[in-house]
Amino acid sequence: MSKVALAALAAAALLATGRPVLAQSSPPLPDGPGKETAATYCNACHTLQSRVGAGYTAQGWDTVLRMMKNHGVEVPADEVAILRDYLVKHFPEKAKPEGVDRPGPAQIAIKVFTVPTPGSRPHDPLATRDGMIWYTGQMANVLGRLDPNSGQFKEFPLKTPHSGPHGLKEDKDGNIWYTGNTGQLVGKLDPKTGEVTEYKMPDPNAKDPHSLAFDQSGILWFSLQNSNMIGRLDPASGGIKLITVPTPKSRPYGIVVNSKGVPHVVLFGTNKIARIDPQTLDIKEYTLPDAGARPRRMAYTSDDAIWYTDYARGYIGRLDTATGEVKEWQSPSGAKSEPYGISAIKDVIWYSESGTTPNTVVRFDPKTEKFQTWVIPGGGNIVRRTDVSPGGNFVMANSLVNAVSVAEIK
View 1 (cartoon, helix red, strand yellow):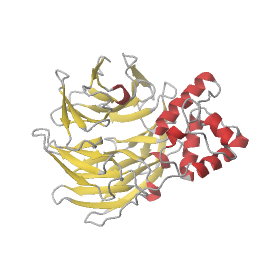
View 2 (tube, rainbow, N blue to C red; view 1 turned 90 degrees about the vertical axis):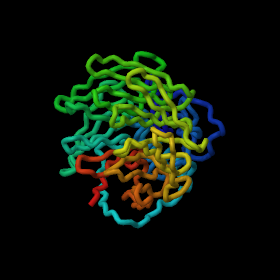
View 3 (cartoon, one colour; view 1 turned 45 degrees about the vertical axis):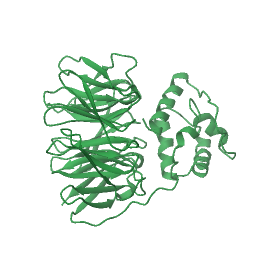
View 4 (cartoon, rainbow, N blue to C red; view 1 turned 120 degrees about the horizontal axis):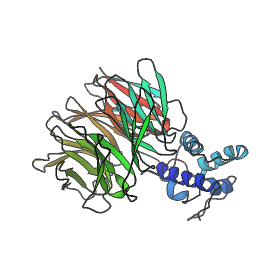
């Protein structure tokens, strides 16, 4: 879970108590106007400095403050500007590598759509069969739907407050399924009626439902990152089975199902990718060659090879699950480019570099082993997951600029 998601948990805790519960700051907060306000509202339940990470731009801090408001943390009106100025001054965004604009043969046009609720933190996008684009409004507790032709949005409120909607998938009937990251649940939304059905985790230790994928028989598989678990949900019965990954603290993250109905999960806390036997639920782990590798998202090509983004090292890689062979390529913007969301479109790999300024769209052709890149209008910031539209376009959610983007491939 990222720093902002953890901040959301803190905000939820504030709601439970009705007033801030202060946590001691270590190291102390910098002196200056706004320090006391930051200590009261941004230093509750955890230390502010432990969650700042690489810092934020002024626009980024505006988004974070709105996220807090979405969760019911009401900073007094006469203190908001002082707090904002304090955060912008003392916790600016640290330098990031420049997003490389590398030419190539493909042509795309990137359209950016700002989602209606400020501070939504759009997380996972989903391109559905009817041409719509969905996203999880993680900090607004909604699922959003965009008609990319008209630009019109509709938001669907969820049942459990502050459930932290995260992953998204469509079933064969057009229902939209999501993981409730902070609500310890998997949910189903009927877009026709707006009705939400929730499936709570059967084990109180099963926290952080994260990403999800359907297999060909309609079974839903999902990862539980901070519980070190993988889940199996049968929509017909509502029954959930949970299995623990053998490697401790492996942080099961992105999950996909191949053409044979076999789920694979990247283990973001280690340099491994896991395969789950859908019948026995046995887990096999593939170890990537570099101990520092941290695979975060993945996609399949038509040969069922796994392509993954190595977030920690700035690489993309290909794993042949039949032989265990791995091949890797460094991303164009370098070791700190933080490749993240990834998709395969006609066996060409598309992904985003999330650690660059601005973020980029990257195209990699496995046949030529050539990269091409484009910068994302508005900066991107941050593309955590991607999807492919029925027409073969590259779909992104841009969390910290509160947008959904479509790269139309010409």
